[in-house]
Image 1 (tube, rainbow, N blue to C red):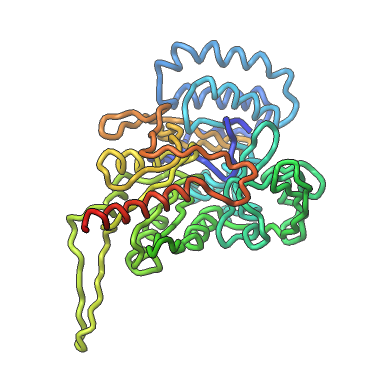
Image 2 (tube, rainbow, N blue to C red):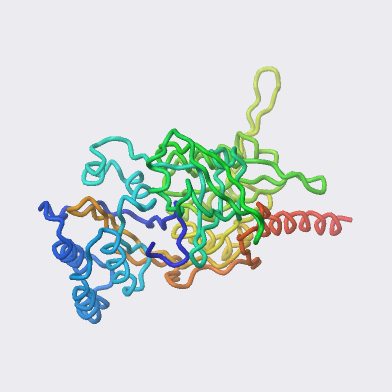
Length: 417
């Protein structure tokens, strides 16, 4: 795949979506030279930095055009185009085929756009999944997140597991699962380095990516009991839609997190798409409402989180999630713990192509409080490196967040005394 430290199921959703291009070629030609020129035209007319296009893209495209005679497969063409697009040094800029999870992620987000919906004949966007996110390290594939409530979690897979094979073949996100939806698939797993592999059998399902992320968020909610305190936890896998933020609000206004003493909001992995105004949950200047019925029973409705809070971030907390980390850190709304975010904050636009592949292209830059985070990212308040390989489900960043919050309560107690 084209992006460094590739993670499946992950995309950097743009800060704003400008709609699908009305200039998508209507011709049916799928020859690679024609498709290449179609992509080049879209880039030249829409890329957010015309100076970069005028100064450098002519030589870049010419160099890759010369390699086209050697291209004979769709995979090779995608590799070539993505190599060309990487030279633009821009986030939200890559070529997608139906063999990429991002293809379905983006299509699900914007399926109501006519040209996108047409790719799926107006039907629901579905993809095969067992509920894992993976990352490749030197040609080895590791699970970096197991979606709560999903098939893999129920089967016993853990964060840090290495996937050696699926039904005896190398693991690829779509191709390994698509032919076996609803039937048993054997995953060969190694949990510890040099340990003996074992097998886990699962049945892939078809699901809408947006729904999968929302279901995982709901299932992630839990209370971590430590030192007499209740630490609430929720993992927001996607922020690409108000429904995800509403679910966060529901969890601490009405749900299990309401009585937590502190809150950890996990922004690692998954999709971006958050807006800065989501930080308003930490605004303490909005009053709480107390409601009293005829029997004198009182119910407090408080839409704000007024207790200690942590954002967990890493190199895959992209796009809008980076804006939240920036604002939380700058205005001391929540403590940011983990690793520097990737600095992928351009605004992207989706272009379906004449062969039904898609081009995701950066068409806007963005500044937050005058700061350009593209290529820079957000450094955490507390840095905690984490090598997920063979961690057997142990999460040092999460543990640090819990430890930090508990220490805060302990220090506050000493000050009171």
